[in-house]
Image 1 (cartoon, rainbow, N blue to C red):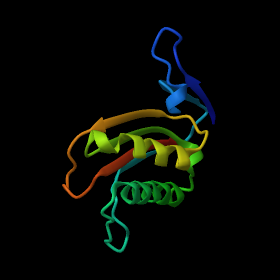
Image 2: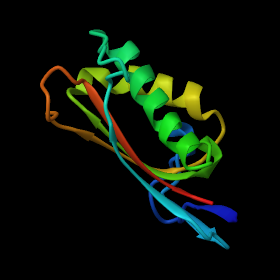
Image 3: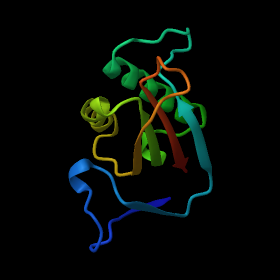
Length: 128
């Protein structure tokens, strides 16, 4: 699989926010569509603070990737749903810690969640 970040020079630049406007994949043979991962553990526990919820939602994303024989290196697209604008900076901080220098296509949407106690939900697309 070959990955190429695409950032048209005549469109807004996104490098400072650590994502690409588009990601081109060639040579991929498997695609994994990850449903929205919520901040609830396998034991049913849900933390109350946003940063802990974000870390747990990311752990759930990683668990789905592992179950498919993939890793964070295979992620190409994320959609992150936040319960409020006030979570934007901590969300970015946690994503940067988890993703490191990996470049993905990204959408972040400020919206209500299915369960009002959830402050974040993360869905993704991975290829291998």
